[in-house]
View 1 (cartoon, helix red, strand yellow):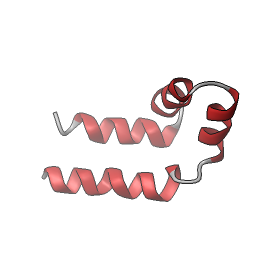
View 2 (tube, helix red, strand yellow):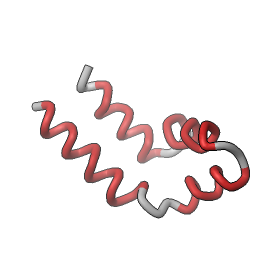
View 3 (tube, rainbow, N blue to C red):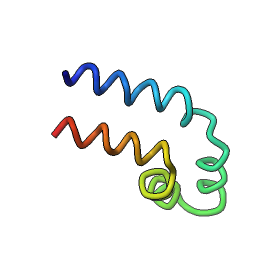
Length: 57
């Protein structure tokens, strides 16, 4: 089961996060921490990744 969850997380990251313009914009205008917080708390893809990650605990 954990491998399936990890595969889902990796697929989401590869499809949506790599090359994300919002992530790059937040990094250039703020800090890496601010960009990370945006991705986890405000981005719909980040929220989905976080919910899949919670299944690993």
